[in-house]
Length: 420
Image 1 (tube, one colour):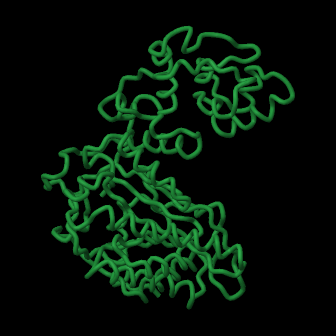
Image 2 (cartoon, helix red, strand yellow; image 1 turned 90 degrees about the vertical axis):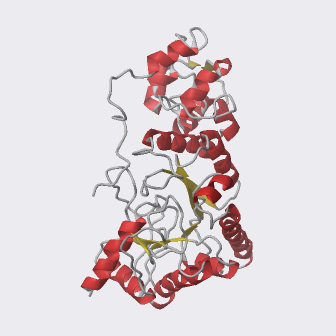
Image 3 (cartoon, helix red, strand yellow; image 1 turned 180 degrees about the vertical axis):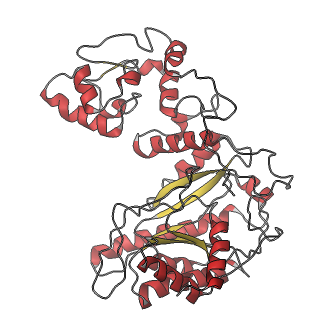
């Protein structure tokens, strides 16, 4: 039975957890077993989203919102006069199990403020997930935030019980991180990331020798950066992301638009809300790096250090590089197909498979899923050799593709602020 005191703690600590966006899950399959509780699906947990697009699925909660740090961008910083609470290990374990059995949740997203020191906090968090796994045989999804500065032993213990671990970078450059969060530095973030990567690598090696070795963070690790609180360019941000993706265990980098939860802090920009469209463009650019074989240097350079907010990064790149177009859909390679606006990964693979049986025309390309409205300016095929970015000009093609709709300030964006 969940008592009123526990409900009050839950209200406080889930409220404090809502600003963390890196809580999606994917890639873990764990079947239900006789005597165990729950299962996890390989297609990921079902998520729900707030009206501003943020994920609030799972039991997304903090162990505590007490914190010894005073980060300028954080609602839970020690200098804020807010309602504080902390779960005991037993309370959080029981709450998770009660909610899971009632089908309220499909997993747990656990984070925390820092109490006493990183290891003390991490040890309590590890006890929660260890007890769920080993005593209650809970098989549902668990995503746990690793505390920056935590010891190698505790990070390794967490990796044995969590499906995914994450360590937030928070601010892309160390200089600005030290300015806004004097108690933190990038070393305290990258070191646990390295521990996780090493654990995954060791698990893969051991797995070759024995099938019975315990899994280690099977859904890998993720991180999060706050966008708009400091003066880094999109080029700076994507450079950091591209380096992080060199680690095989890094699955996602999340970009969180700055939310002014501490408006009186003079170290922060005086804005009502960060442009959410910038966050969206960063996710699109991130997608290009992960699935479209783009490098961060191709997407942005010193001449264009920030993403174009009017058009997506792929179209922006194509308009800046008309020398690559038009491409002949029937002979170009996969790498170049992926560069054509309007052609996605799935469409590109279908084009390669289909053209073995003959030359493709516009009707077939539409059937495959190609968006001809965009692609036609960058390609030719059996029955189409019309206006393109080279026969015309990038500026003219851009004017055709950019919708000119009158709007009020930021009316094309979802609200970044949470409703009261």
